[in-house]
Length: 144
Image (cartoon, rainbow, N blue to C red; front, side):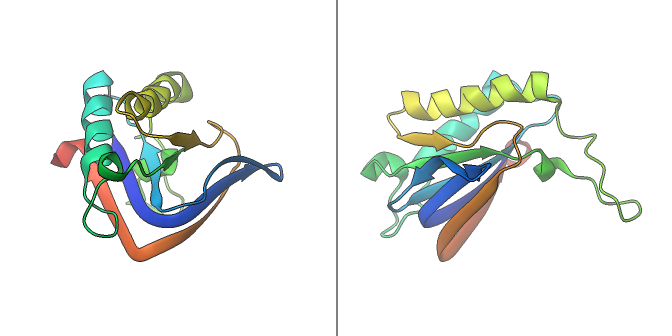
C-alpha cells in the first residue's frame, strides 16, 4: 500500500463539476494506492502513520490538532513504466480488492478521531489543492 501525503491549506475533489469532498483549512491530502497483496494490516499501519505524522505547521499531527484529511484513491501510484512509453497498471489491485481496502483506510482514520472527506472511488476526478510548504511525503508499507 502506498500513500502520498501532501500538507495543504485547502483541497477539493470534483466529479462532473460537483464538489464531492473538500477541506477548507490546513490538513492533509492523502492519495492512496493499493496493490495485490495489501490487506487490513497494511491499512491499519498506514492509517495510524497518516494520523500521527507530525507534518503540519509547528511539527504537529492531524491527531494533535484535529486537522482534516481528504483521501483520494489513486491506482496510478502503482504504475510500472520500465518498458516503453505506456505505463502498465498490473501492480495496482483491481477495484473489487482495492475499493474495500480504501474504504477501510478511510474508516480507520475516522476511528482515530479524524474528519475525513473523500473523492468517488473509480470516478474521473479533478483534485485541486494548495500545497503548504510544499510538504509532500510518500509512505509505502514495504518501507515501514
